[in-house]
Image (cartoon, rainbow over all chains, first blue to last red; front, side, top):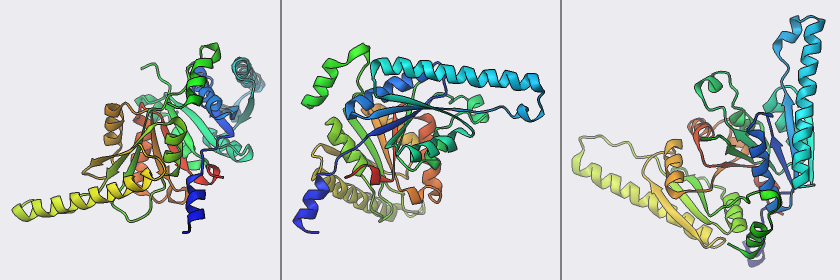
Length: 158
Length: 167
């Protein structure tokens, strides 16, 4: 390695242009977004909030009423994401949101590729035995599917 | 703390607390000969003007418990070799980020030890370097990384595919 290579190697810098924040729209999500926001501010990055709606399995056997109920649930989630995005935009204008449905880890990893995200921020709060049993904790799954760095942040009250 | 961070701290609107990073912990496995990618940890430490702590793990040699004096000799020799490797890493890293310090653990890569050390150190972030291709094959380390992701109260930065990080 010559001198020029060494200098170039030393000049590499952390470059975060797009930060994707995975939110599940529970009460903890605001804190996760705030944490990601301060990183975005520090790096001058754009913030993209993503929520993946998981349709319940019962939809296959449901009646028309059930469909309406599920549709209402989906619209409610979409509304809450819009509210959270508006709240965040008031603090940091460079913020957008994305609402999708499917398997959360897979959709988040895919969105990160499409948006060319440099970092995915995930809040972790389902670390109880029950949460583990129902596989509510998506962080390890996201890490295994992501092609960019993932920052897992404990956003619990404790 | 550099001037930029101080300004950000002072000018933070809407009561949002800025993320502080004073101590960054980067666990590295000293057992293998493979080069550990510390780029992300170094870049983060540089950006936040933080102290970077390299936590070195090394699998202990399998020694029979009844070998008495020989056991001690082999263990201390192995321990010294591992610590020399750790210092090599520290000195190499110091060429890019001067405030890099070593921490040595005489055992194999363990999530609970990382969590304990992070708490003792009051680390603001744990940076785990993972190569994208290694994620499926790294059996034991993968289990430990998952454990770390599930249990650590300190934010865990999983550094995958460093191509996005450097220009």
